Length: 234
Image (cartoon, rainbow, N blue to C red; front, top):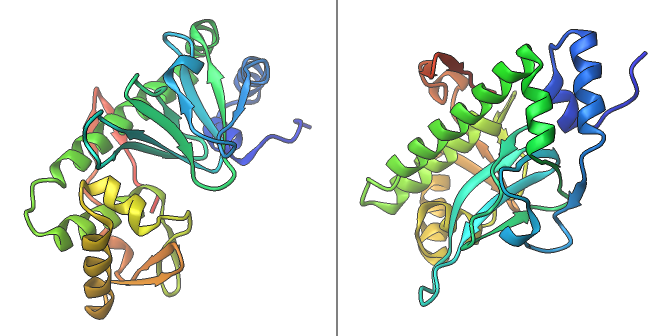
């Protein structure tokens, strides 16, 4: 019987054969853990070439440019997902209780020697690149309500859970954070969310959202990056 592992590790290793899983766990359990909810983490904390594996919670990278008041979220990742460490102008933040494993260059090299896991790592990084491309394209619409709608659909597609009453986005997304994700102001996002609620697109409970749309409406055709299919979690 395998030792219990966190939900993030279990998702990351899901489907591997027992020998591959055991080899990977030997590497991962030797990696240092950082609790993110204790405060922001800066680029200087992480070694060059490191990868971060979200073991618990949900994390975002937030960029702040000197002299510019508005911050922008450049990446987000949930449990079981890989994310790059912050750049010098970025900080890593956790939404609620969040924890990451730091995979240094040696740990990354050992994991890449496991063929099935090497495929998964490349697939995840390719998927993350695809999400960044999609997020960048969301800046094209000039109407902020459309930016908010597209961002909520992207979050639902990547991290949502199908329920009887819609697609639930269960991690906390405040209006301020949503504004940073789309390059807007909190007040503008609040007005856009109110309008989307009146239009029957979304229901909000505190900082969590429920998309009132059929699941098939948020699933895009499978796109392929570097030969690997990006699959929706919805």
